[in-house]
Length: 278
Image (tube, rainbow, N blue to C red):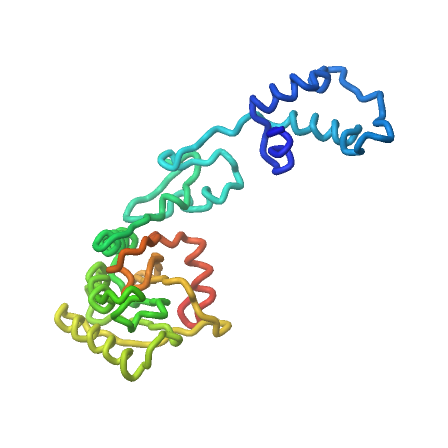
């Protein structure tokens, strides 16, 4: 009865489902099939005409859907969420994606990377940052939603959050004299203590690299908070690039994380949530 549960769950019939039904009810496959006998009183009503007609309709759907591997990255279903990633002509990672290169559509999975371990996460995150922000021109300002941006220590008591943020800054093209960094107003820790220590470290790093740093707090339209960690960079031409990942203080522990690029539609929605940063 595997075919029954597949039908109830909305899956298409497989070849083995068709064969199973052909063995128990070959009449369903006849061209002149028509039910002429109504179920008796001791039969369950689902086995009557409506149910048999439903099976016929189900058998008339398309055959097996082709299996698609993650490496191929093109789902044959037009409404599959895996096809809602890049759009033709959008620049990602310094390269332009087009219909010729990906005729089946782009996939969100191509934008994500999983990493874990003591050093793999940090390397993966910084490599992704260089890919996402690179090739788009100098960065004017940066917006970080990480609520633990001030904290140098992670939940696993590993340290390095501040140094990781400084390494993230080194991934950016800051070729002008100043960059503005917008912090979350809901960041954990006191703004006058842990926040001040973080800002001093960032400011001093900027001086050694030859640029000034101006700090501010971003606002959201509805005064809501971001739970996820987004890192958005506005470039000199007005375009915005962004990636998601863990907190900076979580790049040195052993847990696994997802790191990836924020695609155009997501960036647009995020910018509409921000007050004065659209």
